[in-house]
Image (cartoon, rainbow, N blue to C red; front, side, top):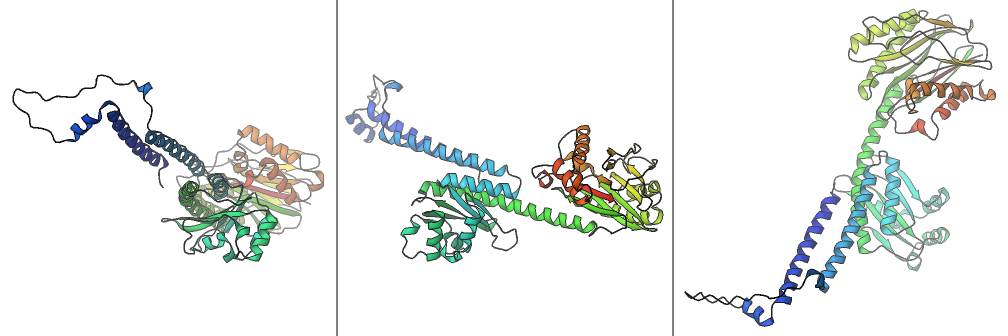
Length: 495
């Protein structure tokens, strides 16, 4: 990526050198008579022994404050100031763009910065990689969904944006349409949409670079006939090349995240089982780096049900792979000895120690008998479950125990409790608590408050309970933010 600071330095050095050169020439002209200048430009006479040549010496030099800059010097100073101001602005906008960490934020920043550079109020950006390998999306500035719908009715080839996206000849530097309504060959549908939306001029610029290729195009709209100046087009082009390279990196990152999230989902249950006497619901959010939080629900003999949640230490593909192995191991142990949750977690700890000796994990396994309203559970360093009903909202008191993989031989006592009819048991991973950004004690208090605030009319629906807790714990889209923490909420409602 081009370094804006280096570009500023090159321009400044060049202008200073030019200004110094003109300043020296002006000083020489001011202090040297015309005749002397002619003598200085004439060939030097050879020295004669015993005779010193006459050396002209100035007897007076005006002080710097008395010097009046020449027209050329003033012009260079103004030009230098303009270049420094423009390049400084470009550098600030580029720094803001580089600071974005998600594709959506980068696209929005690009639209706003481009509008500022070309002097427009509204804009439209279409991400459409030429190789077809990448996300295709549209972002708008000052245009609503209805406005975008009207723009889509215009034939692609009839708009500057469409020609830039198709890579038509002569579009590398952008296409300016300074007076759309004054163009005789303007497509009638384009004219109708321009009148409806109230724009009279446009400027389209490709989002392309040598390294990334063509990723899409941006279009800015003017309310009155206008077009960007040559300087504005130059700065916008530099910014667009910076933005293209940054967008290409974010697209690769988004693609890797999507692939990892898809693998994670494939390693988790494709659907929850149906067991008489209990309704299940789950909410799962994968972190940006791919975490190891998981859940499971499996039917067991004698109409029993096994519920499990867990979290593998670390992130990335290795954590996802370890999560898949642990979940598969727990399912096997639950079928063999599910009535004893302590034995299930002990076997899981041995599996972790043998297959992942440098990794730790937390887990909670509950053996449920819906007909008898009996739950026996054991936890290994995991968040305790929470019971929500009309008469109570409280955490289940589980024994304090270390995570799996931290002790030579893990073992902790199990806990037994009975959910009343109409109560919901919530199992969640630590990622829900950590994603809030609060200390753990305050996060636990927030979880308790979120569960207690579920409306009574919604407590019979585990999906509504899980959604309410998730929205209350992580408001304003924090459940889908660019966080490294996975989130799992598993709700079991007992009829």
